[in-house]
Length: 437
Ligand code: GDP
Ligand code: MG
Image (cartoon, rainbow, N blue to C red; front, side):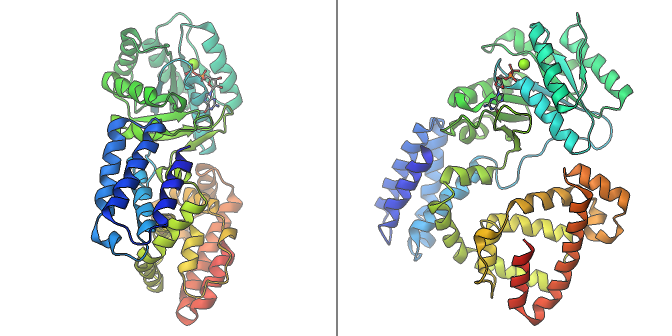
């Protein structure tokens, strides 16, 4: 697999100590082969290796004490950049009024399944999505949407005998009457791209103001999926991609190429047939997966320990200034992720050597982040203004419970107190921060 191939390349590099240009050139040839084997688009693989080479040949890397580690770190960073950067791409969801999402894609790629997955995802955030059956050509398609809609707990709008643009229009009015704030259109697919399919999608978009056009593509199709995405984007203009069946995709070629080829980011990935098998797509996590969590990642962390020592110092200084609110907390989480997670960060703090980094739960960060994102800017600055009603809303918005929100607010209060303590005793601070996570 790509992971094994890359690990092999890096292992060879490590045996070298100081690196020459020839070492790096040879390594990049192998990386390029590995990418092509993983079904990455030819030009994307070529440009990727050119970028990594250029950075790796720089003086900083060649003269560093750990050149091989630095190269791995660069590969990781460029993989993240290739898939869209360290931030997940956001959906264009309105806070007020209706949001219309249209799913499109070839038959069997997962539109109907993902319409229901998205509905469930929004319900967890306290939204009221409605599904709309615009795939009218096969009676079984409407039945299928009704079945998965029921599983997700979302109403399904159907209008027998009408054409898709008209169905979409009527569905909007219906959603308005029933207070459904997100309308998800499940459209028809075909086995291959054809003009009739494309025209129908264009007609729907002319009939209703679609906020998000999401293309559903099967990751297992590799470069074919990327070519399909390119055509869909040219003909109907998409906003993002749901990459499905990543649970069955062992190569990763589509995930790696699709943004570079189409200019449109992957926003979600499907990881199985069940309705909960939907993840927001995080380029940095995908890059970590491709590089392998074990040996290679620990190499990166070690490289980062030196590179990010400055950043860690910066963080500690800001904490000391006591100006720490929840907006800062979000910033810091982003930084912590960049540094390879909480464990890696803790090991950089003075006095934290006694903490077992593997005991630190990075998932806790995801939950906390989701809660903070559900707060208003004012609430993040002054959490004490959050009342019980808002707590319930924040919990619903982040898929957590009021107890979780309370716990976060308590922890935040504690953290603020600890900031003050840090001045007196850095050792005690690190130990308690470790205990909190
Ligand atoms: P549509 O024709 O585009 O509407 O595709 P469907 O939603 O009907 O899905 C086609 C098949 O793919 C179904 O059997 C789904 O269960 C399956 N499927 C959809 N998404 C995923 C996924 O993320 N992982 C796996 N393993 N199967 C999926
Ligand atoms: Mg379908």
